[in-house]
Image (cartoon, rainbow over all chains, first blue to last red; front, side, top):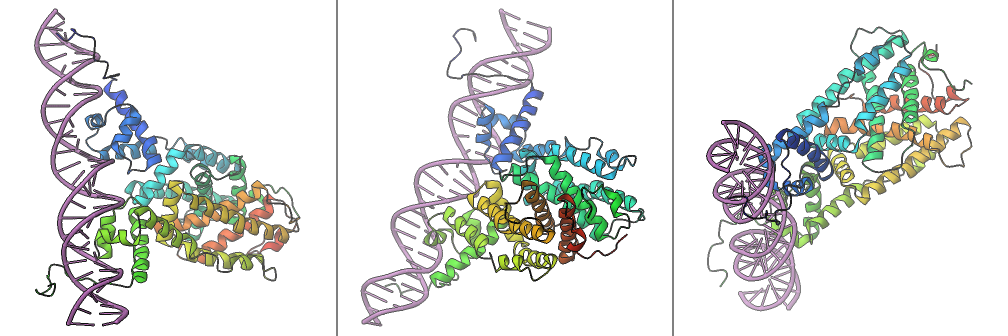
Length: 228
Length: 228
DNA sequence: GCGATTGTTTATCGCCTGATTACTAATTAA
DNA sequence: TTAATTAGTAATCAGGCGATAAACAATCGC
């Protein structure tokens, strides 16, 4: 009964993927879509980009908000922590090398148009996940870095970082972050060599930390290119 | 004919401001509104916040987009340039003092929730006005700062700043900018003393510039707190 | 006072949005 | 082969959007 006629050509193609693959495909494409259009983007436009009809989205996600939450989850959590903590604390290597390698790896993850845009959107919305992320950077990355700086400078390491120390680390970190924003969101010309940018910023941070917090060991932090 | 009945009490209050004041009031309140809600915010909600009805907006602005453009204009252009260029180039004063005073004044303008949010929204939209602003910062502020740094370090001043020099200045500038974002948009705790933050970042930038670009005059840039 | 002007509201239009229902067709199991 | 299941679509709903037209009411010149 169903095979009687040639299938109506008006309904062009009906792919029928496995549910799991479909779901993943939806989340991935939705990430691209929302990162460009913002989360105000329409479900019809999204469906068109996916090559399916709009109601199909509601077979996989109860609501647009649920889809968005899943986008946040994958963007924020998936690419996280690939052994960074160990990298930062390996005192057999010079601190500058460790920081350079860490920020090379870290920026390989976050210097991505999708990632940066969704991060900024979530920040403007004041979402919990954004606060969580900022706290994570402060506690897992910056506090760690300061600890290593103190160790390098011969300071006591036990007490928590002071507000001023944290702030200097934040300004450094934020400066690097803003490089990605300028390059990948504003489309502004930036120094081609990312690792050089990180290296120079690192030199400024490390010497700055030594100067501001009065290290007696400044000259040991990093070899000077030129000494007057 | 019109005076026959007591005025219908259902129409509560009809203020009737002068057109110019109304217009200005609309733009000011619209700035607050859009900075919080994003430019996707509805004209009805905006009108409710203004205490008037929605169609009245269209007597003062031909369309929502025109209103938005006026918001951009006032936010970006009005608070700009209060003699900053002269401040930066006054070589009778130490460079650190000049930069500290400049960034005190500059951040007094941009460290404002409304300003920062609208700046970020316009950046995500890729608007021309945002590109214009970024170019302005680079050409009028950062290039100028580098020129002064070179002068201070005894370098030739005529040639345009190198990409690496500009980048170091951008990282410094972006780090300060990001302090505002963290404090006023993310609502994250930050060092209370803004001027100290600027001062410490400045120390890092100036000593960093000297180190990275090989100044023979590093020690002259800023008095060290402690010398080993 | 009175008509003209103009600031303001009420009512509404067409369109787009997120979401639901009922149907169609591809797949799976017997 | 056939029945059951389920991926996918067409059609549609209620509500919100930007924008417009017409009615009303406050002010101003006389």
